[in-house]
Length: 298
Image 1 (cartoon, rainbow, N blue to C red):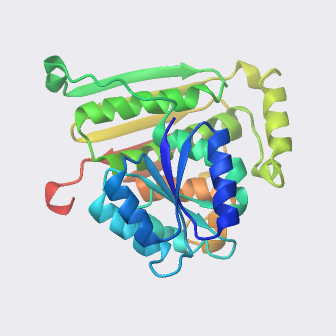
Image 2 (cartoon, rainbow, N blue to C red):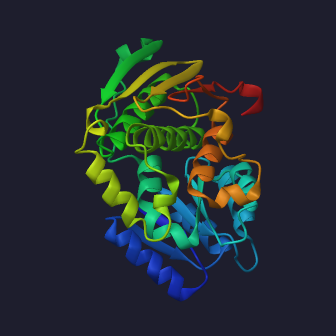
């Protein structure tokens, strides 16, 4: 269970968010303004901040900048209204690790939180031997069970933490990018699901995914994940066994209208958070690279 600070000045929406987080087994603290949120962060240990864009006084973007400067260890998520997708890029620049359109909170909040917080607390292993660890290489072959993804991402997070590749805020961003890329490979690659199935309440997406996980040829496919993590770089190669696609057909993440689409958001987050994002010619293998940031620009 995580302690999440919800910054929302509308009492009805704040109560709705608290109930949603409670249903996800998280504890929610409420703040009605950016100023109140900063005061709460100074007094109470907090795992994550979920803030509205539109706040009286200090705006949501201003709050994100303050959190980044004063509480850099606390990740934050921005909630956007329809029509305000263009602020997503600015929110990420101000320190947010993700953004969620408000009308998709009920559907997307859980998977976003898993991508940031992981499925559970990681082990704290600070033995002397681990300080001598200079590189970790691993390869995983996963079946099409989406429940495995947060556990794999949590494992990579642990390794990157031990390698001291980056700070907590950047680490959360890498985990979001990995979650998006793994889910794309599983659902769009191996199961060949169209993003259109996610429209509406998403039931068509869930139903079709469950059916295909039990049907040939989909059920016989695997995800192949190779990672090489060192003090200087994290390199992740994700390959599915689907038919592939034309990488040139991906939505342009710099176009604001694409930020509202499900596929556009994932591509946008991957390209924003990672230093390199590239596909093979067949479109069924993705390489993500994050390099250690020089101390002078941290």
